[in-house]
Amino acid sequence: MTIIGWVQIGLVLIATLLLAKPLGLYMARVFSGERTWLSPVLSPVETGFYKLAGVRREDEQGCLSYTFSVLAFSLAGLLALFAILRLQGVLPFNPQGFGPVAPDLAFNTAVSFVTNTNWQNYAGESTLSNFSQMAGLTVQNFLSAATGIAVAMAVTRAFIRSKTSALGNFWVDMTRATLYVLLPLAIIVALAFVALGLPQNLDANFVATTLEGAQQTIATGPVASQEAIKQLGTNGGGFFNVNAAHPFENPNAFSNYLNIIAMLSISLALVYSFGQMVGNRRQGWALISVTIIMLVVGTGVVFWAETAGNPLLHGAGLDVAMGNFEGKEVRFGQSMNALYAAVTTGLSDGGVNAMHSSLTPLGGLVPMFLMQLGEVLPGGVGSGLYGMLVFAILAVFVAGLMVGRTPEFMGKKIEAREMKLAMLAILILPFVILGFTAISAVAEFGVSPILTPGPHGLSEILYAFTSAAGNNGSAFGGLTGNTPWYNTTLGIAMMLGRFAYIVPVLAIAGSLAAKPRVPASSGTFPTDRPLFVGLIIGIILIMGGLQFFPALALGPIAEHFAMLAGQSF
Image (cartoon, helix red, strand yellow):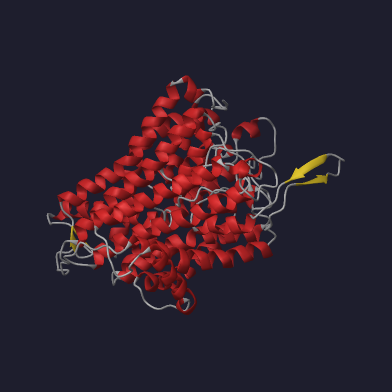
């Protein structure tokens, strides 16, 4: 590790934190229905959409209606994207002449982008047409992110309101998230990416002659526009197979900085919006502190593990002064590779600028563990906020047990119903991840696609289902996921990780909105102080991570000790 490396990491995180307050305040105004500087331009467009859809913005929905709207809208998006992929061969903007996507792969891809996962069992530049990339994937990059933001706003209102069943209107929240937040930012970031060298065109592939005289096919397309919403919406699905390691997606250090800042900006700002909307900005900063502390620790472990290098290479007489650079881009350096790996998995982004399967065992353990913690650091846009609030509910419950009082959070009493629903949400991830991993690790159809047998092979499977259930989308690249078994089971894992979590979360919101707000008293446990920050970190580590320790011990931890002993798999 180097000082200059930590300075780079610090500058990126500081820039993101400086954006959190103004962007958080802006989003708080948007979702409170207040006028913003974009209202003169966008308000008529917003009103036009409501008229076309028959939506009355003043009609609010209760828990069941809001949940049904989320599920119905997502199902419609899934069917539409599946149809686009299957009919790709007869649709326009297909200069490469790509045919239809196979049914199981089309199912996996449709589920992936609708659930904000963006797991990709294909190479985008050799599989999908420009139409599929734009009208299919990019549209869902906007809409899946907007759905997560809408759910987060419904949960936020549950803490603001008292003795009501109304959580807002999903169609209004989703429209405002798209029009006022995602679209303006995506335009700005896309233009910045074009200025930094990313392609933005509708051209077919072209052939270039290399210095050796060989012919090489070069793919281009609407890269900058997809890259912008890919990061802002914490989607992560790249235009190219190697994602942000490709020079057309991430050509230089400045584009790399912008990638990371774009990934973090909305998710962190939404946490600040929560504090603003509930009338306690300190609460927002407390939750942001949890995120930053754990991201810095995760980044530090990856940075240390990768700069320490691989002792097997040292034993072979190779110079390891630069650390482990296998699967990495030299133009970014170890520090920015480490920060990107931690951020993309602390979020539910999944984009990569280095190959996670090539990380050292401990370096690869960190991204996997950050996903297993529940994708709340700060998590996907919207989903990270409501996931963090579930852990906050668990934390105040534990605090209540310690002092013998009924737990309260933001003026709402946390009782048996909320705790049961919170535990139901928390248990979804281990049930899906460990269940599918166990089956895949013993069945021939699950083991045969592994590239590297032994502990690393188990890590490939465990990482895949962790990424799918956590709606992340990154991968240990050694696993060949484009098989009927993995396309189907990973698709199911993505749906359960998204919607089986959203349903109990919205049920919690409905229950809390119906309760009166209780004024704070001398016995109320303060949740905007450092003590609560420490408590919630402990709860996240115990409830989110401890249940995965046996599986991690058989995978990356076993591989680490084998590496120290001079063995390779």
